[in-house]
Image (cartoon, rainbow, N blue to C red; front, side):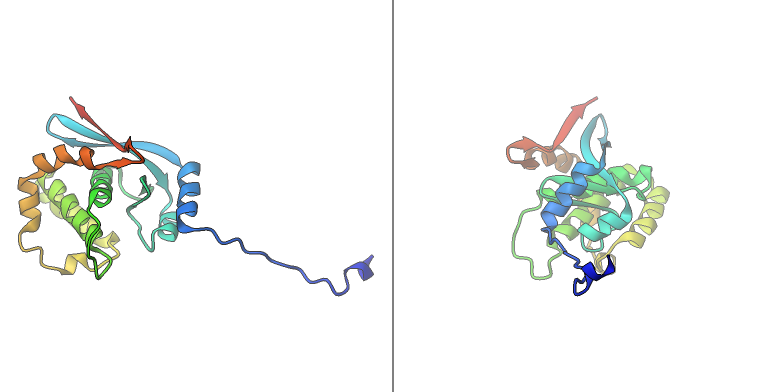
Length: 184
């Protein structure tokens, strides 16, 4: 019997998959949760795939918090429940951001962080915001928090009602609305 295997070597095949297909498979296989993003008497409902941080890091280049690919929203299981609305608005803002000249590759991400921080500052007390900001810095993969925002976060906070109202208009994928605005 042993003679039959002489000269045969074990063969390992690797199947390469595009990042989009990997994300699509992960999204399809993951538990979906609805994250409510409240503002006054309205709420945006966002369907997100709840995934382990390790899986998110794999598909989104080191991202530990939340991410978006092709109209699919992901959130890490490790993101505290009370911070999930901030992750959701971050992903909505990143998906809605206009594509444009971006020499560093982070323009949409930085815009989304700015909207996220404006929203969190608008909805949290000063003490809660500082606690959130400390946690948020611990999971950020870019140098965003080393940059001077020149008062942008406060300007966004002051216009959050307008931003919140307009987000659903920009969020479609293949003519399908990605987020639902509910008046309470």
